[in-house]
Image (spheres, rainbow over the protein chains, first blue to last red):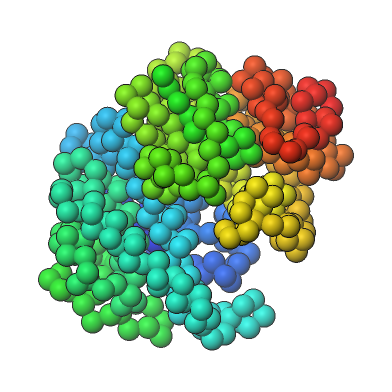
Length: 230
Length: 230
């Protein structure tokens, strides 16, 4: 059976789950905490990071972009319609640029610090950096959210999808990224109404359902997290 | 004319220059220092990072992976032979995994810190972080080189190319990464003989020539940097 090693609050993991949902590919999910550096997991991916996808021959594919391109080549490109990559190479480049923006840049400037400080450090042993959140790191990371949300709001203001005229990987990447922060109640939606409308549409897709029922040990999702009309 | 905004010691820029060299695509090079945050450059790429490639209509493509995939779709995939991506989706995934390893992981754990501390900080104004190198950062980054070189050595020990039976983007990504450190004399080649043989072969390719004549203000390349037999 196809298998995805993931973490519920990993943006890249959520992105791959959304793609699998869009393609209707049934996949077994195994939860993995990178910081635990589990031996069997490191054998699959020496970089020690989620997501890792096992194909039907149990060959491991590591890394968000690697898995995305693989799923596109094996599932997306053979579709007659509702492809998640546009046809034009320039539009495809724009999708990849936005994937990188939301899955790497936004992640490294905000999301991953907030997840680490608020969630992972409570579970991690002191010896590997666990303990109370560092309020300075949290403050810096939180200050970086609004510029990214403003950029998304600007992208959403003039069109229904981030690239081209229909849903693409870029929408899923941005939504995956935002869903983590929204789960943690870190997004002030009043400031970015166009982004809010766009997110409501993406969140209503069937592929999003499994993300909305995620549970994370010791954490209650923000009040509106699973509401489709918030 | 096609244009590449690059930095001589940026691994991603070197990787794209190697691809352009392999495909014989004549491209004007414009040197850009990210830390200067030049207004006209930020207008091309709001992320402020090299490489940025301008296509024939002067549409900017930003980011190493974005440009690589675009060049593959517009030049690589139409070739009859000497393609830089293997045909099989699993092999392509392995190429992308190694690209990510050398262009992101190795870069973030070692190369970019060494370049910043040794080179960029000498040119940067004090107000944005310029000044003397931080010896602790340099020491940490240098300690990370050997594990990556050992991994490369292990990959090279059993085969001529990193993925499949012929040259791929993975070889160019790894070589781009190593060429920056080799320029700065940071690699102890005696420890990794299989990686050394592999690098000598890649370095002898015509696509590598322009990299070997790079000059960086105020820096003399390591003695063997441009030797094809070192």
